[in-house]
Length: 203
Image (cartoon, rainbow, N blue to C red; front, side):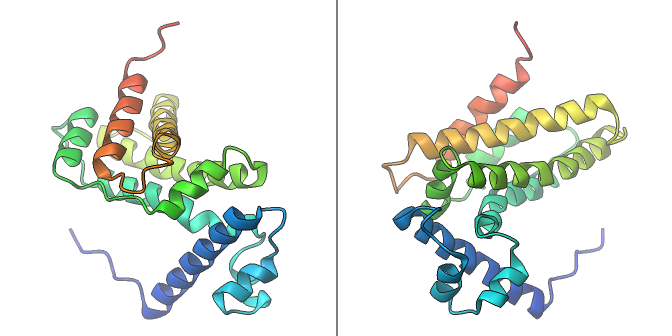
């Protein structure tokens, strides 16, 4: 299999700037509220012009999208290495045991908690998961030899996506006062969510 091309220097710089903007946006949102924060303040905190900020993000709330997408992108990357002969629960369990789940930066947990109280940030959080849904569908389709347009695969992709979101929110809530929480705690929440999903609907 041909290795994926490394992002260009310009692409890496763009990604780094987007993450810096996202981090400053969360810091300001946490300290003075989303409503009390302006795009101009975020731009000033990063050291860029407002024009540059708006070139990267359409709204001040959307500035946090890179941070909200980071965990999903990590999960997608891990699933691309999911062995064909291994079930999902075993794969996740083994990945957790091997220490492949990274610690989550406190700023991301702060942000996830804010999505539960701020409707605009909630919309960005849901958008991040909506963007990940077709990627999950393609991964499952390639694994089964089916089509990403099949209803069954769509439902399975939505189930995994929902479990990832619920696990992240549960982790952010449970470890709000524990800045030392690590991949082990993330794994506990993730496995609990996936087990619940794999049980099916008992109603």
